[in-house]
Length: 313
Image (cartoon, rainbow, N blue to C red; front, side):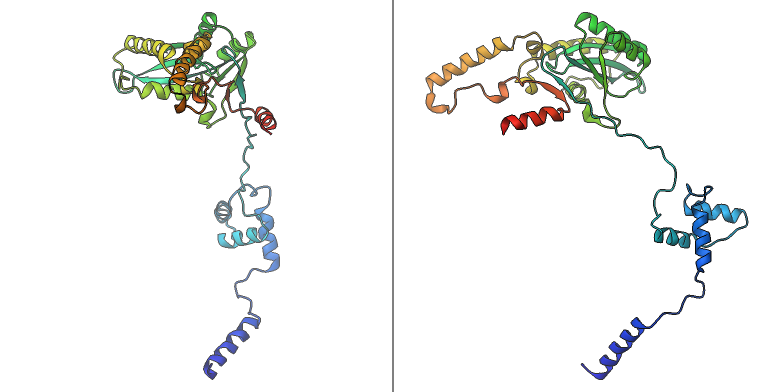
């Protein structure tokens, strides 16, 4: 290393250790104290530095630049949201379990496009989460709490009164007429958390199945057409749709207790195959995908999961 490089290094080290002169425009300690006190005063504690700066200037007062305000707040570890805001408590996660049909119903409303742009019909649909059976379906020209109440009351009259009714937080779902009806019938009311779509998975999945049908029309010509289509689809879904979530049984078989008969037929067919070609099968039992689950749930409860883990252990 030559003398020029040594000299340059020595000069840099000297400058690094030498005390720097205070800037001519540096705020004094008293000014900093005054500014910070102003920022944290009752008048300005909820406002951003830009707002405070503009307000003071409008009143003929200049304390310092906005960047200096931020620097002082940063040094005091106060750079954060300064506005008073409502603290919304965390919503409780709905945890619902059904061990048989008739225990937990879920319902929702979906839009059906009408004959012209901007015209829609509202389909009210209620599902038994255990059997996936469509308990009720009605199509109306509008959505309202009164229509929702009448729909639910009609479903209960034809089917049965469940322990729990779950829905999202739409205006009809949280309306007073619906709440009063459920309270009168001693039915527990459950709602999804705000902005959490998978808290109502059964209704959402059913609407997707409906609207992805090749035969689902882009628009319905009239309310009569919409009602007729929905009636046909509900009958077909309940009686013929093989649902993977219920062992590829139909919702009607599960809802009306026919799965045992169907399983016997399946096992008989498999038994013939096992006997004819035993070398092709390692296990002689009904495949898991064809078995009914023990229960259906919306957000499987933590206690239930912990119990399953203890049994597995």
